[in-house]
Length: 307
Image (cartoon, rainbow, N blue to C red):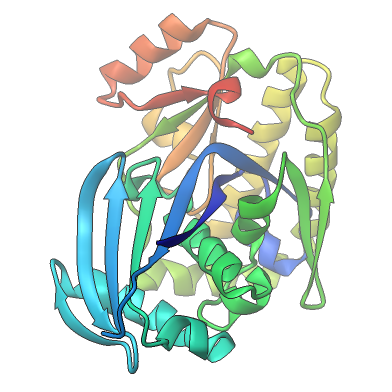
């Protein structure tokens, strides 16, 4: 039985957030957690795709599709099945004989982290399928979704990258980023999901008035790369938070949830959801205890999770 295996990295966006789409230079971090995809070809002519998704080694979803026209024959969750079907329909436009051939296939995906974490369950899947169909991952991604594509860049990167969009073109530059104080940096899962359509519209209306802030964020990103001390780093991420706070007309997450934290806190990605970054000289035990008092128990150290 022929089998192919592919792997892509998860991601976190350290700087840039909303302004990435407007030209801000951003620091993106590929992770040691990611997603593996295995494709096994069966010796038959039934033309079926047997899809199995495993999350942290547990079977999470399965479905069977007819390969010829990719109809959903059965599934444990219709919404997930529709999502997979849509991706495969687009994949077939790049490699129809491979995706829709009469030889049945078992496609198994293995995600290293919870689907709730926002660490790249979609981008790692898109990257792996692009490997399978031998397509440019950015072109394949943009045939399905909108977005900057930084997560696709992380999926294939061997380490941190500086990422920027200039007139629709992406510029990706590998960068060494393992600061001397990395042991004092933590990523904490907040358990929230952001955000509503109204807040997105508000963000878009505000952003037009603040495009000039992109150059300031770019400067902060470069300064973060060169920061020599934890104290300097904390000042920079606090400045970053304050700029986005004004643009989004929202409080920083530290000011309204963690104002007594002994250090600096920065939102990552969509404000109000997924992970935050905490920087503190207090030590891991103290930091963990602090967040436990807030009901937050999922915490990763920087060296533990960043590739």
